[in-house]
Each structure stands twice: as C-alpha cells, then as structure tokens.
Length: 262
Ligand code: NAP
Image (cartoon, rainbow, N blue to C red):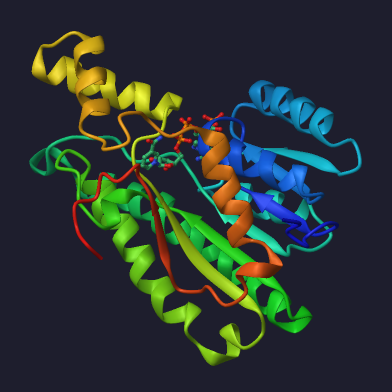
C-alpha cells in the first residue's frame, strides 16, 4: 500500500534512537522529508546518515537540542519549510515513589510530556488547517490506559496531554480540515529506555537483570517486546492519506498486554 505522503515534511522529535527513530525510518521510506531532533548531536548525525542511505531522494535535517525548552522547539520548527506531519516525542520521566517527588519534579514531567507537545501543536496546527492536510501523532505510553505503579509522573503528565488532545482533535475547525491528532501508545518495546527501566526494577527488587527482563516478556501475550520498525510502520500509517478518518484515537501497541475488551 502506498501511503500517499511523498514530498511532505515531518518533524520527528526525539528521534536519534528508539521509537522516534523507528517513526523517522518509516516516514523516510515513504518519501517524506524529515527534521529529526535529539540532544546528543553525535548519535543524531549517525541516525541521519542511516536515514539518508534508506532513501537518498528525501531531505534529512538534524536539529540538536532539548525539545522540552523554548529554544529547542524554535530551532526544530525552523528546520523545515513547513510542517505537514508532527511526531511528538521526548524522553520519559524517571520512576519512583510519589512521596519523594517535589513540585519541581512534577513541573519537569508536565513540561516534557504534556506542555511540550501542546506548544508544538500550537505552532503547526493553523498552517495545517489552512493547507488542508496535517497529521499529528503523540507518542505517549500504554500507561495512559493502564497505569504503571512506579511511573506516576508519566501516568499523570501523559494523561493530561491525552485529555487535552481528545478535545482539540474533535473540534470541527480541525477535523474538517483533514488534520488528525492521535496518540500512539507503546507497551514494552526493546529500546534503551526499556533497558534502563529493567535495570531500575532489578535494582529495586534485588534480582538479576535477566530474570526481570524475562518476566517482563512473559507478562506480554505476544511473548516478546515490540521493535522500533513495527512501531514506525503504524505511525506512518496514521500519517497516511488513508488514515484521514481516524482522529482523536489512542492506538495501543502492546502485544496484547492490556487486559480489557475495549
Ligand atoms: P530511547 O530509546 O531512550 O530514545 C529516546 C530518544 O529521545 C533518544 O533519541 C534521545 O536522544 C531523545 N530525547 C530524549 N529526551 C529528549 C529531549 N529532551 N529533547 C530531544 N530529544 C530527546 O526511548 P524510547 O524507548 O524510544 O522512548 C520514547 C518515549 O516513549 C519515551 O517518552 C518513553 O517513556 C516512551 N515509552 C517507551 C516505552 C518502551 O517500552 N520503550 C514504553 C512506553 C512509553 P538524546 O538522549 O540524545 O536527547
């Protein structure tokens, strides 16, 4: 299936590794020009080289910076002539016990995982509506549907984003202009972030890393973790011309881990 988005411009935030990189790869393979961001310039450049090799016909622009800061967002937005596709992503907040979190910890989490995507949406949505095409995908977490006990900061901040977007996506001034906004909710995916989480859980429970990793995999009906390419492919479909009637949804990719019928 051709996705019909060749020549579009995408801003893929936090894309030098992991899920963001998977999304950038899938878009580049569909002929989409991309601006990719991350704080670490070296890994970002290496990823850009990989993307250019996948499809020499597209432009791949790198913008090194922290997407959770106003300067980082301004630089990222300035990297493309226009933004047709916005993939919101950033690092997740640390795990812990809420009794130890300060107001500053909460503000950091809300800033990164709720206000940063909202600010970016604010910057691009009117142009999308004027041009009659726009796709916004927010990478959130399965924790939005089923909270993860140690990830209270993530559960809270991402649910705030999800609630806000549920209203915005359904505004006729947005939805009637072929502009869609959806959440893509990862369950366990095999990325550096997951390795860090597994190390934390192993330390907390005093168990070997391998044992904790194996039991995490066992808890997923698919009996494996997801990979960045399958995540990217779903993201690219949500950005395609075929997905113009899908908006305000939260698409869970978790190998069947969520136990509810709906
Ligand atoms: P990852 O493998 O650690 O990759 C994170 C990427 O984001 C890197 O490219 C990193 O590069 C970049 N990044 C982090 N903070 C940034 C910032 N402030 N500004 C710009 N770039 C930033 O993580 P991942 O597993 O792909 O996770 C992506 C998101 O999905 C996270 O929010 C995570 O919590 C969430 N999630 C992941 C899973 C999973 O199983 N993997 C499950 C649920 C939710 P730099 O460090 O160089 O900036």
